[in-house]
Image 1 (spheres, rainbow, N blue to C red):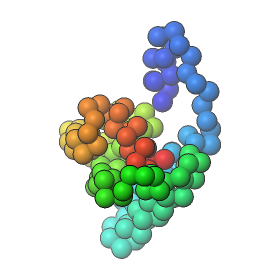
Image 2: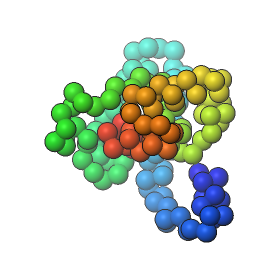
Image 3: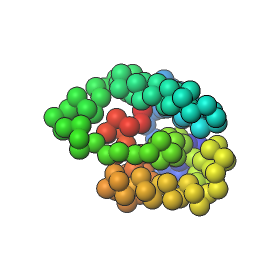
Length: 141
């Protein structure tokens, strides 16, 4: 995130004031998904991932309703794998592929593959648009 702020400052535009609450919730979501990956007990790992999904469904992360409550049918919602969501959650925090790989105990090439797959499923062409689309669909806080 600091890198993005520096880029905006160099471009001459001031970034919008950060929302500490929203940033904290996004960071917590990414951390919980990262912890879930480290759990060897598949039942417990699935329960933690489901808890993350319920967290998103409450709209608590941004004060809005879930994307499923909109006019779009839930069947149209993109289906991302848990690992694609893990990668996107760290990308949403401003992590590079290398940083994301380190957090998730992956290699950067694997992160790139998950990111490519997620962008394809979301119908976008960049990591920034993938995060925005995932948030619109209620897949990320």
